[in-house]
Structures are given as C-alpha cells and as structure tokens.
Image 1 (tube, rainbow, N blue to C red):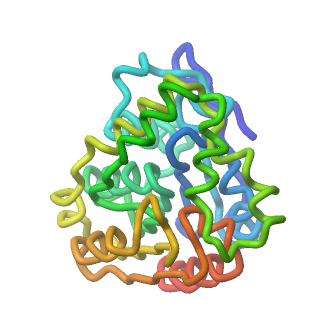
Image 2: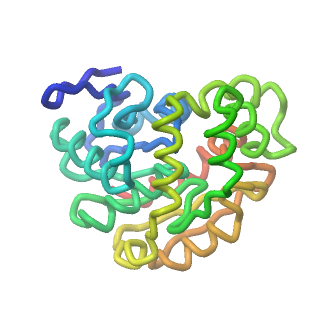
Length: 257
C-alpha cells in the first residue's frame, strides 16, 4: 500500500506491477475498500501495473468532503486526482457496483485518458431498495450480515463466503449510507452513450442487487460493449467465480494496448 498525500489528506493506494502497457485502475463499490480487489491485483500485476485505491472515506483513506456531499462525480474526481498524482496519463478502468458508475463517469468525462472500461456487477442506473436504507439506519451493526445474504449466489461455496464476508462493507454508517444514496441518484445513461473506449460488462447470473437485466441495459447503452453473464455468481462475482472472472478480464485486456 502507498500513502499519497494530496493537500492535507492521505489516500491509500495499492500500486503494484510495472509495464509499458496501459495500467489498470480498480474502483471498489459502496462501503467497501480496495481489499475486494486483492485477488485480481495478485493475478494481474505481473503483466500490467495495477492501481487500486481506497476511495476517500473508505479503507485507510481520509475523507475529502462531508458525507452529505458524496456523489459519483466526487469519486470520479478522486480517481482523476489519484491518476494525476501518480503521473498516469491513460488507463483501463474497472469498477465494481458503485465503482463501475465511478469508472463510467470517468470514461465519459475524460475519453482521451480511458483506453478501456470494465463494468462489474454495475449499471448506468441502479435502483437501491428502501430496505437497504432501513437496515443502515436502524440496524447498521448487522448491515454487513444482511448485505452478505443478498450479495452471494446460492451456488457459492460457504468457505468463499466466509473468507470474504468481512470485506464487503467496512466504511462507517454515514459514508455507507451516502454511498448508496449516490448510487441511487446517479443516472449514467447519457454518460454511457458518450463512452468511446472498448467496454466489457460482467454481471452475475444470480445477482440480486444489480440483476442481469441491469447488466443488459448497460451493455445496450455502451457502444459496442461486450456482455458476459457469469453463471453461479451473485453481486461479488470477482470473488465468487475468481477463475472465470480472471479469464474474462484477461481476454478483454489482451485486445488493448
């Protein structure tokens, strides 16, 4: 992990590998941290530089703004600032769930700096069920347990669920709620139509949070996007079906500089 000091704040970033190929920037989802990408970083860093930040207010990164000001656009600007600080001019972006919306916003805002886009269990528009806010507001101490129940495919082996259950939501209550609210507000359909980078949409066949219909709608909005729905995978498909995810990602990256 690297400590990036940006102004009076610190951001923690996983930054591994060294290659002349385009680096891959991995963006985590709501309430999570870069820990969800550990396996992907391990598999990929021998072939490409891999950058996986803890977004502001997540993991080991300081907050940048009050939680009430949280938005997809704020996280977009954080990714842009991190890349500028690391002197990375052009990247491939991969984002999970909320992180996919952040990556999408980056690709639309800075087309010259994004050479590829991977959307994982994400959507241009994601409906956040009222039950999510209810559990966060009234029973946050058990929110991680509740989220676990709706995030994994019934086919996922118990040992995988238990291994990764603790990384799904590690942010505090205020940030977690603000994240889900940002996801619910974001309308990325116009942004998706503006993307010109090659795109891959990966969805879980058993995903309850961003169901296959959301992945299909996203792929239809992204010009020329590839779509793969991974069987026996839920919302955490990169952890549930790690080998299949790696194969899909590697195949897509092989087509890029």
